[in-house]
Image (spheres, rainbow, N blue to C red):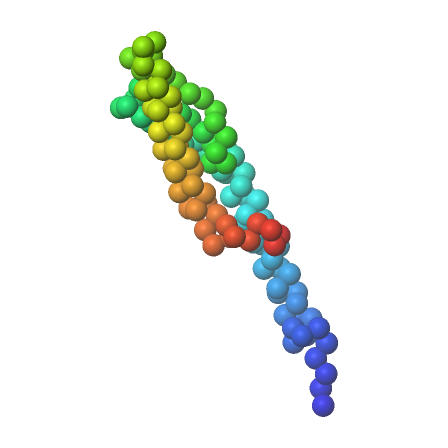
Length: 110
């Protein structure tokens, strides 16, 4: 009776599995680098508030038009900033899904 050492059917399958894991790790690292350098733009009130962030949701800039700045209505400006951040964040999520594909849930495994 043959005895299967390691449960993978021999060294060739284990090597193939290790190569596949290495390739996936390289792809994940490349995708993460791309997310770090990519930019997404969120807007609110037309373009009264424009938020730029990278694909990792790090805010890089916030631009305000003069029309957005009303000293008598600070709440509107606060709301516009939140909407623009949420818009940029949703776009960063979409970009992350696109770049990471099926690897998104594997970050803890690599």
